[in-house]
Amino acid sequence: MKIRQKILMITALFLAVCVTACNTNNDENKKTTKIEDTMLKSSDLDKSVQIIDIRHPERFLGWKNEDGVSGHIANAVDFPVEWLEYEKNPENIDRELKRRHIDKNKKTVIYSDKDVAKEDFDKFAELGFKNIHSLEGGIDSYAKEGGKLERLNGYEMYVSPQWVENLINGKKPEGYNGEKYKIVEVSLPSEKEEYKNGHIKGAINLNSDDINHIPGPRNIQEYEAIPMEKQLTFWNFCPDGKIKEVLENAGIDKDTTVILYGTEKATTAAARTALVMDYAGVKNIKFINGGKKLWNLEKRPLSKEIVKSDRVDFKANIPQNPSIIFNYEDEKKIADDKKNSVVASVRSFDEYLGNKSGYTYIDKSGDIKNARFAYAGSNPYAMEDFRNIDNTMFNYNICSNRWKRWGITPDKKVSFHCGTGWRAAETYYIAKALGWKNIGVYDGGWYEWSKREGSENKEEGLPKDAPEKTPEEYFSKE
Image (cartoon, rainbow, N blue to C red; front, side):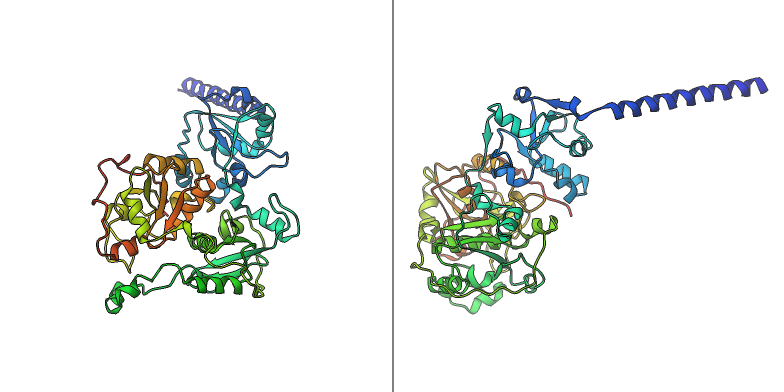
């Protein structure tokens, strides 16, 4: 019995030594693995390689880096390394990868401006990529070797928080030539204390109800006693005189560079404000890409000093740019002209199918004749399909490709609409930044269309020629 016990003890000791040795060898292998060993050269980037740009969103769009390189590597998709810090839920990170058609099983290369930092490489490796590499020398080397780059046509419309902070601090960021400017925080009526509690230094405040539309009752029962003529004015643009008054009181004239932002909820409100200003004739309008959400994620300073503006003269009659707004008669013509025009429905899929109206003040469900699904979000007040983790604009190539599937293309006259023109405004500016020319927003949207007698509606449900039965939408469960 004692002999057997001794044999067992010797065997156990031997196995322990072997395991320890194996673990030691594994640890040594890990320590000796260098990021240089994972690097690919620019010449290795053939069609089989999946390319991910891990830089800040502004670089992917086209803003120059320190070496003057503008844009991103052709066919690359964006996934900034900062997102791995902003979003801790692995399921949501996987969702973001899927939204971009990123496949962890494919040979993958990530790149930055120069060599990828080891800590950043490790973060992506830990996500479970089977065959991941980094690009030697980054995009700077790739550009010097004549590699093909792409960028968003109108990238200068979307400025970063850093660009704005440089502007505030008296520096001269790219694209700024010393012109007068106004930073504007657009607030929803429900955000009464948002601006007071902290805003970007020097920013003025505009309430969306004061400039974006003529507010109406939010309860459908209240409409019963209101004449239809008056009902049709609700939620549409304010009279031109009111728009001019608001802009002049805000210190904005046609030559003022206006930089708009809001909270995540007010991002569509900021886009709608831009549309009003654009229609009026403000020549240079920009958005803080990511808005207040990204500003806070980057831990940038806020001010509580209330900023007032001196009244100015707008220096032009309003509107200077009326063609970007389509009225009811315009929309009817567009809906009837399937060959040369397209009605782009920026609504949730349930709204598009006619399953719900989406609003407490719109009683009818449905959509406009011949409308094509243009993506939007999970509900009538959400735009996840066009937003990233940090509230920056979603990958513009994917946006364009989704539209293309539904026949929403730049060779046609495109009318974007939603319920009352807010979500449509956000997509209008994405299309404008893509370089699309013959585009506009149907201001009345489904609200007006559903109230007008004689309006022809899209057939219920999914059109027979729909390119997809279920849209490529990925919504967070949180």
